Length: 247
Image (cartoon, rainbow, N blue to C red; front, side, top):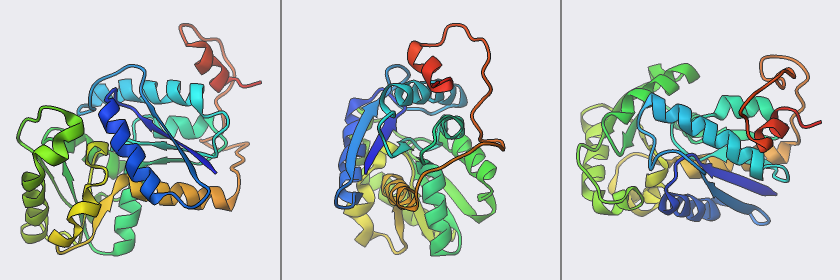
């Protein structure tokens, strides 16, 4: 099977982190293809940036998803996820929906640890929309700068670990999601230093996508996720026009 992972941010270093962690979670015979957004910001932190990231996700899928078996929106907060589910007849998985589902299976309450304080508000809004907010113990984010978003897990590793321990000791978390593509792979490296399960969104999404592909195709002819009706448009790229109206 062929899986497309779309980084909605423009950071190539983060795309490489995503690709490496996806390869570690790939089953034999699974091909991993990672793409970086053509436009946008270095890392999504606000609602406005998430809207731009959603557009970038649709554009990337329009250009690269035609021969794929599933697509993963590889940023926490899942920008563009629900829209892309409307447009594709293959599984589309987001890091947030996959990781909170995995946390649910572990039982109890989960916390999120991320790369900034501000980003936590948007994350919580997304998790509330998914219906998991009552299971969320807390969000804790870095309150420190970093030189490169692709190196934040190395530059601020001790701080991130301290936040994880605070989630357990102060917030009562039964599992912790390391939220955000820039933290891809960190859970594997530090799992033995945290007393509850650590969840990596890329790994969660890979496992979910591969399971859904194994179940077979998706055929939607009605309902809220059916393909949008044909209508006039202006200013859309040629690729996006084909994505909305493939025939």
